[in-house]
Length: 196
Image (cartoon, one colour):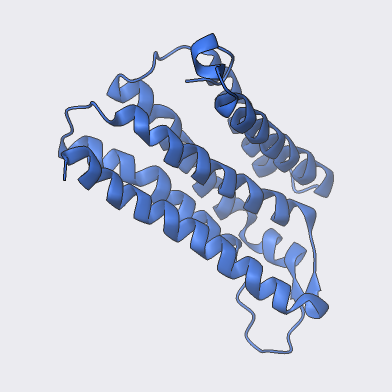
């Protein structure tokens, strides 16, 4: 086993735990469908975390040739760890089997902490490439990452439902765009935006 494989296995475990928590929460909500009061921002933030998990895991390949040290390893764990914590915050925990699950009330009760954790996780995931030297500090990706950060900050500043929906919606749309552009055949070699 190479050092890269050893390190990425732990990062992958954290990413997998975040996705598992997300799927467990979605499964519980689906089983309780008659008792769930849906809230679009809650759904959109869950989708955003799933897309981030997918994109980050895929981007780990860029780190395969690095000369790893413990500081780099610790830094690499922080983004996935914070995303796992963010998903855990988003997951409602009803106290009784017949309790109505109001996703708006739940989201509003964890909104500020969730968004700060999400923003911190996004910062770690954004900075690893430039800090490790696998991507330039300034590139087309920074504009997109800046847009994501601005959307999270807007959702932090305003409690209005419209702001929550628009912010989370822009984040999801941007991540979907990044996902499709990054994985289109020839996108990376053609130098399209979000390709590296």
